[in-house]
Amino acid sequence: MLTKAGKLGGTALIEHVQNLKPEIKQLTLYPSELCNYRCNFCHIWGDTGWALKEPQRAIREQLDIEVLKKFLDEVTAVNKNLGVLITGGEPMLYKHFTELVEHLRKRKANIFLLTNGSLIKNRIEFIMENIVGMNISIDGPEEFHDAIRGKGSYQKICENIEALIAEKRRRKKRFPFIHITMVLSPSNYLSIKQFMSALRERFSDATIELHNPRNPFGSRRDLSVNLAPLLFTTPERGRAYATQMKHDLDCDVSPAWQGFVEESIPMDTVLLKKELEELWASEGIDSSDYVDIHDYYSDIDNVFGRTKCVAPWHELVIRRTGDVYPCVDLPDYKYGNIYENSFAEMWEGERATRFRDYLQTTNLMMCNRCTRLFADPQSF
Ligand SMILES: C[S@@+](CC[C@H](N)C(=O)[O-])C[C@H]1O[C@@H](n2cnc3c(N)ncnc32)[C@H](O)[C@@H]1O
Ligand code: SF4
Image 1: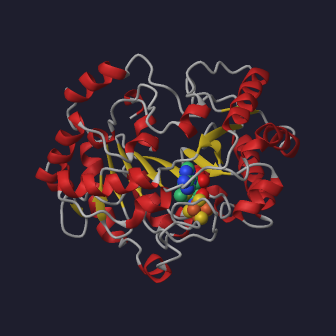
Image 2 (image 1 turned 180 degrees about the vertical axis):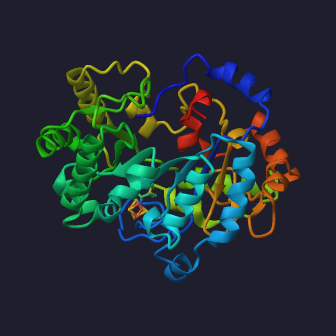
Image 3 (image 1 turned 30 degrees about the vertical axis):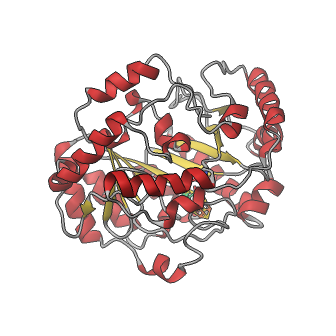
């Protein structure tokens, strides 16, 4: 669940951002965007996503591993404790996935995977030895999940998670942390209580807790479950974003923002709020930090005190084309390309500086419902 801004919110956050110095802490890699699933709400492969319109491009474009390795060497030389999130599409479909992970481990990076969980089985040993955190998407109890992600996928993912938990226990290891993410979309949002019961029934000897942002890496639980609100925009905001980028930053935007557009979101969010409150109470969760879910869905102007995004000071995003961006889901304002530019050229370059300067005073029209606006400065 997303949280409101804590002490570092409102004007304090604005001041904090005005004094920030760039310091790279995290990379997000989309080495390919191939996927074996077609989740209906997905902003890449879903009904309004770009990839089904351009499947050939999605299949063709995968990052050259040698170029990527060279770039990663430059970044890890600057930060010896870099966090690297590998996502996609399905990250394990990247043709150099193993080589990429092994290279990052040699450079002491902490690797996190954002995965649909379908391809874990033959890689259990590899994951145990190399991955710090697995974020696995399950979108509700079996019938809800399968309606979104395909028949049989719930059972397959659960078998994979079971094998992972068993291996962790056999080795008495804390890592990888296993987080389950359920995105709350119109087709599954009323199944949250049922979901927790279904997981506890399926993994009967495992400890399962709702994700606690105050203790994200609690070691006693086997699984933590994050109920994540949908990221979305309105058509008006999306169009205003395109105009803003062109006018203020001379940037022609990609169609990516269109993948987030929801004309309307058919959810009874008052009921969702009630269901969540009941669930949190029954799980003993202090929900005072959480955003009001009804406001989140119904009032896109409300940013819950999260007045500024800090990501451009700490993070870079590398897409399958080699293009490098500050924004995780919007391949629009480009710093450069790893086939042509060094890390230092991009990170310290004129384009990055211009973007950070702009964000110190202005937010983008797409920021309001972006995960990074809700990331805490301390978490980077
Ligand atoms: C794009 S997927 C890539 C990784 C992997 N394929 C997976 O499904 O987890 C990353 C995460 O984004 C979530 N996601 C996709 N579209 C979304 C949207 N419009 N709002 C919120 N989350 C979304 C997915 O459910 C998943 O948890
Ligand atoms: S598995 Fe992930 S990338 Fe693939 S369609 Fe589903 S949400 Fe999108």
